[in-house]
Image (tube, rainbow, N blue to C red; front, side, top):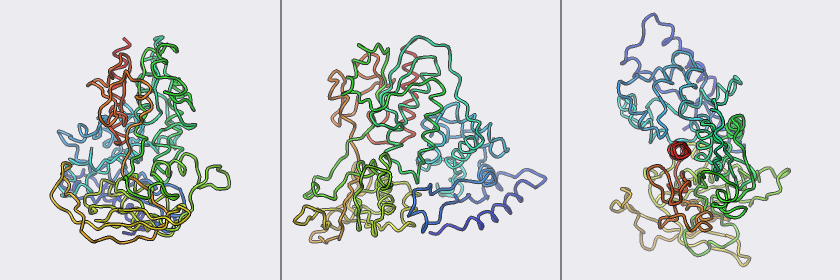
Length: 495
């Protein structure tokens, strides 16, 4: 699907904007429901597949107001309860329709300090937009009000205006809180705990802040300057950051409390342990976990060969194994790093893919090739142990499994070879094991996730946890929701 040009979008928007906002009488609900969804402007696919600039350009003010007018302001808005941090969605959208962009962002920031990020990477179509009345009226969730795009618009507007102000911080309490990990859960806890006047220090293992948002999500989806701005806001609030600090190695977790006198600790170390398929050939040169591949490209900026000391693997033909958002990121990054052919190998059909529809569409537009109902059997290497091919099997769908998706069943004798020199495994991640391995007092489940109660408290007094270290690999907004619950519990514990 090719996007219309910016000029075409601008002309269509001008006509529609005049029809909606220059009339003498307000629109009826029926007329509101008939307003067409506003397409997100994007870079041309031929150009963007060769750069790391953000693909989605963002709404214009006129587009944002038109899209906001599609919200009929339900009497019982389910979008609020469907949002993990319960943003007052109808409230901020009405402000956009009324041309009060500052009022809109102020409402969002009552419950979320990361709107620029959430507006870009949260799967709104399976959360706040899934029960949208506008989408239900049009019998298509893709025609629901574009809540995420509107959230992004006002967050970007505020940043462009230079009016971002840090939240008010209460008087100092003398209590100290350590946050382990600067991913979405950690940053939310840092903000909410600091607001109450507690001294907050965030410990990050890497040399840059942002956790999975920095190392896992490419800049063409989430520019680093957005993450930098969110961190800057926390700095202005008085949050302190310690980088290159590996809790469990630099300092054991409980020593933060015993020796450094922190009154409470939040663990948000994420799910950074890559999973592999356990097939022959995964130890060959040219096989990567998606984590390593994306970390080299994103965090270490390996794509900038002139200025980066981190090399990347030059590939011609790449196979990406998996069907989630991480697989889409890896496949699209491989194109930008110069691959001629990139294949996404997935053992179910497109309908069952967990990746966001928008990300799949962008990948297709950019030239990624999808091999559905297929999966890797063996990775083949040459006499120098370099990848030269991928032996695959074909599948058909059988009865549903525990996830509700139809189980893929191997077709006997269906083996075939795929000519590739690189294989990227993107089938999921496990929880970071370092903290639990060096802190045996912490209870974990069989997957290595920390066990917490309904207030996000671990088995150790004063230690709380949230995000992927508890959930397993999840989404930014779910990690934020857990962070808010943990922060509330920490604030209660400290008082």
